[in-house]
Structures are given as structure tokens and as C-alpha cells.
Amino acid sequence: MQPIRVCLVGAGWTACNHFAGYAAIPEKAQVVACVARTEWSKERARQWTPTPKIFDSFEDALADGGFDAVDLCVPHHLHAPMILASLRAGKHVLVETPTCITLDECRQLRLAVREHPHLKAATAHVVRVWRTYQQAKRLVSEGVIGEVFHAFGDYAHKPDPAEYPSRDRWAYSLVYTGRLSISYHTVDLLRWMVGDVEEVYGDYNDDVKVAVLRFKNGALGEVMTSGSVVRPYTLAMTLHGRKGTIQCFFHENVLKGYLHTSAEWKPMELATQPLHGRGTPEWKDEMENFVDAIREDKSPVCPLTDGIATVETCLAIDAAMTMGTRVRVRQ
Image (cartoon, rainbow, N blue to C red; front, side, top):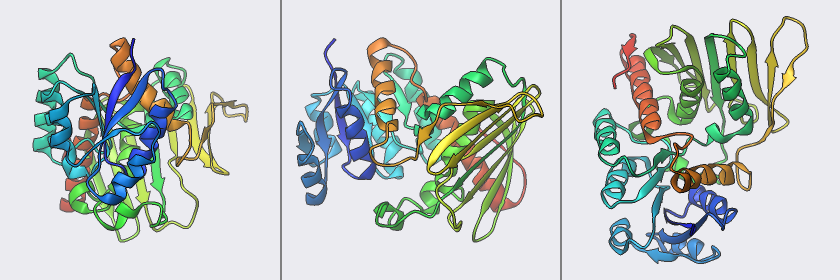
């Protein structure tokens, strides 16, 4: 089988990491096109090897059509219209998080996925390919810790503005991300482990946001996010089940996990994962998962419908924080 031909839309921090992921699997995929609007982004794309064909606009790229899949690394409000256009053009699509930003977009995308069942559509919730969490998911699915009755996750990070220039432009806008902001990654992680969420509540102040989740299976969950913390990056998780507990946290910039099946300190250690960032194996793992879904006609680790459900949950959390009441998740 020939490598999957990919069009990368964008050439910023995330797109460069995605390109590196594809470049690590040349026998399976090749970035043959890139949409870059500014001279700065075009110059960055010209430095990629092999150099892709560069387009000034997404519309021009779709009109050319010389590729099999679209990878969207663009501002959040562009996600839904570009996903819809890609599917209508017969292209597989991977979109960065969040999948979209409104309930109306969620409905449109759910319909589009049903209308194009032969195309692979996925959301790039990169945490799902972290090896520690992959193993934790297998343990939960195999029933090793029994029925999960409580889950906790956090996303605490004060990023360097130089590392994430979009932070001061659009990436942290309430319009585009809601009050939980980038902690939609944590919401998605808990949904992946425990299941769909039925009802939410939340509260916040200037330094921290906290959400309480009631899952459809009766389990309770907590999500905390803060950009005021004074500590290294963390995206940790704890799962309490009737037969065991899984704890995952960062230690010295490495994600570690432990499975406890008794009250004694005799844990099983889980696979480790390097700190999220440039040059880490997560990008190869994520791009390979998407490409393999196309090549082998199987489900990606985060189908677009799962990404949509996470958005619906986060929108309910935002509404709960705004109104100060419990809110049911709408699908």
C-alpha cells in the first residue's frame, strides 16, 4: 500500500509536531501539502523535509485535492467548518482539540460522520496515546480494578508565552475554550476511562476551576484546572474501583502509573511516558494511530464522535459554572 498523503493545515507549534510524527513513519504517510497563510508560516513549512506543496488557503488546497487526508491544526473556531468541508470533499480528517466549540456544531458534525461512514474522522486527544494511560485503559477494560466509582484528573500548567504564542491571541479565549480551557484534555481522559457523563456541576475563581461529573454508570468524577499554580506541568489521574486503584502522576517530568490491588504498598508499575512537548514519541504514536485507522479500516483511538461528546460535556460544565446549578449533558 502506498503511503497516505496528508495535507497539514497550519504550520505552528502543533502542526510542526504533527509533521514530525508523520516524518517518523515515511512508509505509512507523507505530508504532501500544507496550508500556510503568512510568510512566517510558509517559511517554516519550506524547512520541512520533504517540502510539501504550499497553499495560501484551505479552499485552494481542497480544490487541488492531491491528498487522502486532512490534518487540521488551526484556531478552534475554524475546526467545524473545515471538518465539514474535508468530509464533503471525500477526505479523511484529523482535527486538533477541541473538536468544535458550540452545540450546533456538535450536531452538524454528528450528522456529517453518519453521512460519510467510509471516511475516518478523528480528534487529536493526544493523551489517549500516552503509554501510561493506554495501559491504564486496558486494565480498566479488563476489569482489573473492578467497577470504577470515583475518578479524578487535573491539568495544572503555567506555560511559557514564548512556547505557546497563541495563548495571548485566541487559544485561551472563553469564546473558544470555555472556563475549563485546555482541561478538556482531562475531561476527555476521564470520559475515556469511565464512560459518558450524564450531569455536571462546577465552580471557579480567578485562580482555579473545579468541575464535578456524574457519569451515566453512577460514578463520580472531579476535574481541576489552574494556570496560577507554581509547580511543573501536570496532567494526573486517579481511578478508584471496587477491586483496585490506579494512580498516574508526573515525577521528574515523567508520567508514572501505579496499580494498587491491596492496602499494602505492593503496586504494579505501569509504562512511563515522557513529558508532553516537542520531540516526544507521542506525536509518532498519534499520527500512526490515525494513519493505521485509514490503512487498516479500523477505529482511531479517539473517533470524532468521542471528541464531540467531550465538547458537549465541557459546554455543560461551562453552563453549570455560569448559572451556578447542575446541568445535564446534551447530545
